[in-house]
Amino acid sequence: QVQLVESGGGLVQPGGSLRLSCAASGSDISIADMRWYRQRPTEQREFVAGIVSGGTTKYADSVKDRFTISRDNVQNTVFLEMNGLKPDDTAVYYCRQLSGGRSYWGQGTQVTVSS
Image (cartoon, rainbow, N blue to C red):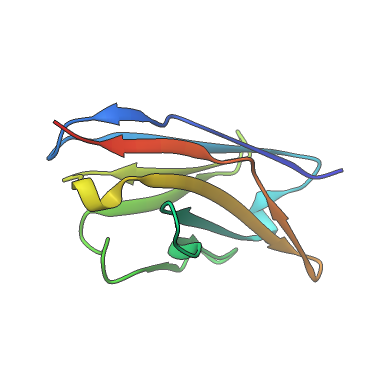
């Protein structure tokens, strides 16, 4: 059974940084398409960043040059390094795994950017 557990969220001031982690169990992330999404209150969940098995990454325009997605295959964990955070980045951040034709989601971690 695939499980994804996010961590690392919290309260940070504008301009600050956070590093989110998504620890996977029951699967091998090195051969999966791993993605981060976020959802603001009253809005739809939106794509933030993704990394495929070959290592190619993709970012939403709103986070490009500020966020970095990476993967540690030994720890079976995906990371999202977030720098230059803005109040508009406030949301619940979710990890998603696509593999074997299936989609799996974590429970989410709250990120709040406020002074």
